[in-house]
Amino acid sequence: MIKLDDTDRDIIRYLQQDAKLTTKELAGRLNLSATPVYERIRRLENEGVIKKYVALVDREKIGKDLMVLCNIRLKEHAREAGAKFVRAIVAMPEVVECLNISGDYDFLIKVVVSDMREYQSFIMNKLAGLENIGSTQSIFVMGEIKSETAYEPAG
Image 1 (cartoon, rainbow, N blue to C red):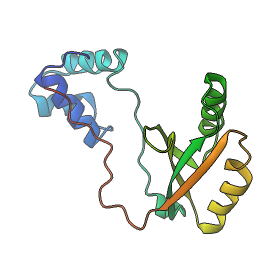
Image 2 (cartoon, rainbow, N blue to C red):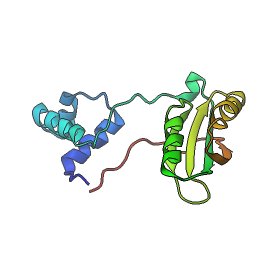
Image 3 (cartoon, helix red, strand yellow):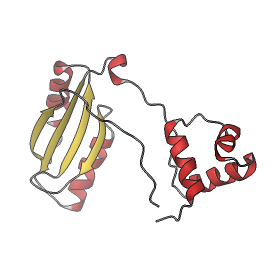
């Protein structure tokens, strides 16, 4: 774990709220000059604390109205079979998250598509085409109660 001080944590909080803040704007909020703020941001990036900057898109405004959580159980758990499954899942644009989980299933994927017809096509033409799928269970999301991308840095 990387050691963060209060200023590092404040920088992370501000950038998670608005990644478009300039170094000058951040420096003003932190009561520091721009140079040390710039150097801290670069250090946080170089150490991998800040992985990347992204634009968060409202999926419904771009026609991606259906979100499905799909549990997947693999038939075979050999290293190469698992790696092949992971490579295939990573290449599917409909899959926006993939988690390796414990319990009755091996993976949980979050699939975002426009409608039920597109999800059916995804299941039949992509997921079912993977040779190592043992079973799946689809859970249809009726509403998002909380969806956050920010993490509270450890103190």
